[in-house]
Length: 189
Length: 189
Image (cartoon, rainbow over all chains, first blue to last red; front, side, top):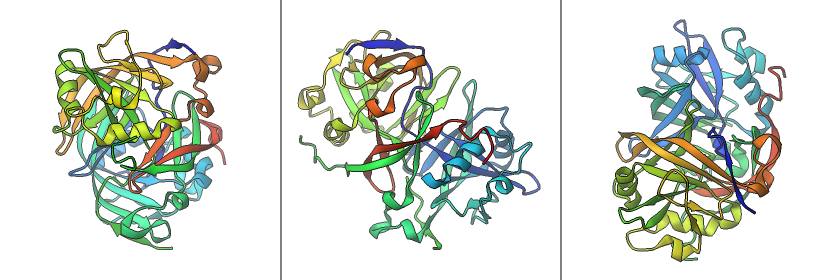
């Protein structure tokens, strides 16, 4: 084995794959699939999503200053891919996918009912980086299906069945096996 | 099934689990495991990492303005967990884990040899968010083991075997099966 150089690019994996919902000025909802998504802060809980300025959802999130992060399950992978490759300017993605918009509590963007976890977010800051603008959003409400909840408000990943995007491979992957709990080593090998 | 509310928190999954290397002023290297990591921009390629100001690595990255993102494999999960729960102030994590530091090209922070992919990054911006500071880093060099490379510079995920952290469950998970390539639906179900 030896190390070789690759051209600097988005070679990071695994990444989240999230269905982001947003609304236009009339309240009509849209969906965009994003993998340039991450947790960025714990107190207050904040996420980041990066969107190209040319994408239809970019203008919607910028104007409304809000969005919902919907965590899809692996059986939805076709719908997840579709929402990443067609534009809301031409296609009503809720009609096209059959996904169900349900009202959120604190934002106008809908939750996607079929996604087991939904995070309502309000935009706190927009940072232009080049090809993408970085939206920093505070999580104001979290919804979870009762069917994927375990004791203590923890999520049962074996039921939620989330999807990862492996940039560098351009592939979606399911979760495999649970390798351990955070802190399982107690700091010793 | 019905939706229930959870307290706003870092309930997002899957997330990357990365070993971030950095150096102190004398060149002594440290490792910190982070899951608050993501891709944020494509041109130029940029990543974000969030670190609490109290963590030892925070001061190192802030002072040196650089870091390396090392992508671990599932067999390293114990070392990954250890580097997230002990402090570089008290423990030499390279000695403790037996991981091997090798020189990078453009930064002083070392690569971790055992990690199949390594991203050398230079800090472009630091944004305080509350509990964490968000470091935005440009990827300047990427290294890959030749053993995990496929044609066209793509990564073979079944060989790299990366790990996801499922916040909301507090668990590390391996990858399962490949669900599809980006764009596999060609925009149609």
